[in-house]
View 1 (tube, rainbow, N blue to C red):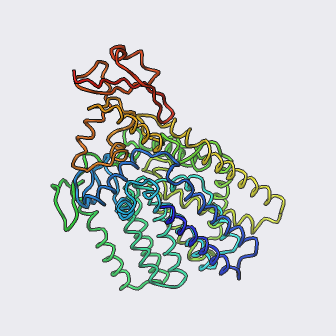
View 2: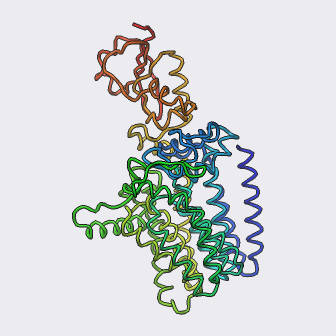
Length: 540
């Protein structure tokens, strides 16, 4: 895996060098340097310690096991073959787990291999974005500004450094915009690629469904109005999109129209007991208008401070660097005001981006705010922040002010990076020990191996959410998962059970288990929590 990552990094570095060299006709030396260093920083950040930071999240473990299971057994943990929408963990999107099947086949249950595609696609998508802006003859200050803000957006760096099923929507969404912008610069086939990617967004994150139809229709109408596509192109694009969407449409028919589960071509279609979309939406009880207003305010607050009120973990933001978010928020507002005031003079690509931003309003209004639920909204705000930063450097003549603002952003980025690759892994895992829903994989594998040495039939009190993690920690045939879960249980009885068993008790709680204290014990630690393990190797 290290060789694959190194080869990818070398190719990316060469691509960045070629891109900045190609842009030398329009970018100054310092703009070229800023663009190149920004993209190199992004590359370093996304690939560095990819397998250990952050800790393995429960939903990520679910998705990785399904990918591994499909690679080796042809079915996921629910024994479904090519599920259109996974039944795992209340429902998960399937595009990413299928993208990672080849890597799971080659490298086995490897967290670095599983996270690799989302990191790679993120870097590629932002490099192509910079190139697309160059091709559209966007101001050179703006190109450098976008390269910087998209490469240093803290939430984006974190979001794409791990691989829950829906995280891939960020690079997929950026790539969609990339190819539409490239089409505006000349080549029509880029539009076709863009629409294929747009259709595939439906397989990335169910929370985005509410905005995708508006984005799709707007893009078609905009390109038609600008004379970029013909009626024949529209028909072809719609047909291609329908073909791509047929599987997900069959799922919606089963889920929302009550049709029974069935096989469609080589896909499995089954309803979920509940859909994750419901968990992503605001509450429609009580005063809905107040709920909407509160949700929008919370979303704006997150944009301006990086503090998320609705997310329960530190996987998407670190609330220590509000100054970085505030500066970017100011540039976001500056860009929007500037382009709105001059909307009659805006170029096609600017008008397209403004239109796409407006199509995100259904998410802003109806989907719970936060980086987890608004990722494509925050992609656009980070993009606009780059435009604002570029316009600021273009329009402001005070060199000292430019240096001061840019210096603040660099300092905040440096502090954030140092913390993320320093104390963050420890703090993040401790903050997410609710049900053991975030784990240090090295510690956890060692912990399991030490427990195995006790050679007992049943392990009680496993300090992980066993349904998601045990399949990763002990790679198991999906047909035998029930046996695995019976052997390794979260349940911790207060009395000695029949048969040989180990009882894993948090050391701080041993006084609550007096009946176990007659057994031999050993002290262990995992995920920064100390445990006393009582064990009975007898069968009486």
